[in-house]
Image (cartoon, rainbow over all chains, first blue to last red; front, side, top):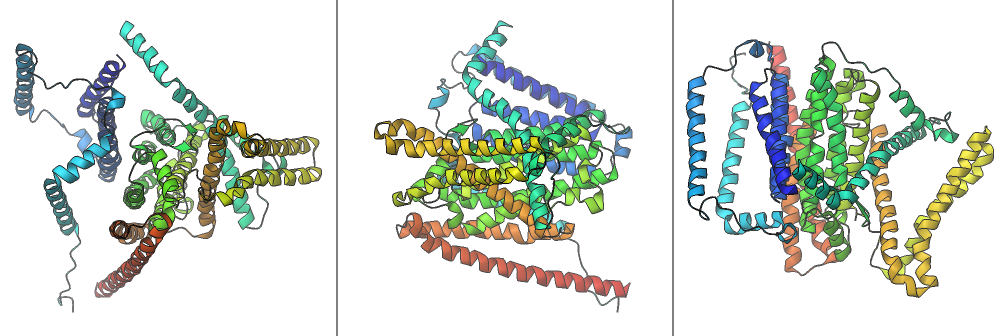
Length: 179
Length: 457
């Protein structure tokens, strides 16, 4: 009972703040609601007993990415952007995409209703205190079963990071032109 | 509606104890923060060869209460062009994040608000990192240039130093093998050594990074008085300002507790498993008695009768605490049959004492550095973070990992681990010197380039 109430609470906050994120005119307000949406998602992770995902969501998205978002928003002068019309340019594309997504989700629900027991993959419930510790499980999977893909992904991220540094670096020309 | 009520009852049944503890912490913490401020002013006065606050109560002991009353009845000003809602939200966010982080910590084995969280240390670090939004949004919402500058500096600084602090924690966690706070301390008990000795470089890195993360001098650029008035809290007054202050001091307690738990043996007394050193158990009560006796000696020197009474009361409190600390040590000696019943009390009371003692020592270190080292310039701060601390902590993680594998290979345990970790620390030290040399070389080249540009232009 407590679980379902918490789920609907977090899900409601997440959906409401996601809507507010795209409808606010002020960029900082949008960012605040995006943070709220991310935190509510973290709450759903916690309600599902995925405590490691919960804290990673908070550390990476809220504590890392969103801080940089807000930093950039403050650094860039947004007064001009606020006065311009910000949306309605891609109205029809967005409508098509949203309808396609809705059709997909609807199809999944419909098929799950038709085939009892074979639709949505719901595992049999395990008591909360019987679950294995989340972070250890995740570490075992990442560093034992999927070590190679994990390393490849980290090398890819490293390449992206070095690329960004190289592109952002100030070029100093040591030419003889000035002499 | 019925479901909601049922869920609420279920929630209260499950979590009434942590909730009560949380309320207690929220009630007590402002007082503690106030007294840390008093201690800080006294330490500052001592280092500058003066007396500090002396007027309110004996030796200024009631100064925090007077300050709190002043802040509560001060006029609450909101700038006209401020973003009202965000202006209201920002200080609350700061305090909420700091208090929530405190919930994951354990003050001794007995007192823990949320016991045995699987992700313990990560929870504390992650949640306290959210406090930065209070600073950034507060600076933005004030609609003032000084505030905005302070907020920008603060976010840049915190993002940079979080990486170094995180990597320092990783080197400590390698020895513990778990994120659970109770198990981290138990690992140090089992191995019989503090992880700070096994990973001294990580402890140093964490010390520097944690000062930067709490925005304290010499890294208090976000609120540099001489440059930015008061940084992000320029426009905040009265109670809102005191919320920021509360958050800052709570964050200090949080980082000190994290360092104590991971590097300084948590609530373990020095040499917890050496039984012929059990005499150490008499140290805490002796310390309290000494403070009490000093208070009694000072009583006749107080000018007013109320102050004399207050001083006596402080002395009495010290004696009571000394008795409480002494009881679980002496009782089993007098009556061996109750030894087992007393054991958890002994662990809780003495564990709490040692934990708070280490946290206070760490905070004293903060104050000492604050009054000794001059403030960094912003480019120096960034250079220190990105060019020195982050490479050093990455190298340290590598070296510590290699040392651990070597220790496993030679079957080393506890103190003998020092045989491999000390050389590892030296390697990290040499690497640090190499980084510094490379960095100063780069700096020289930059300066030369700038100079030649200047003359060319």
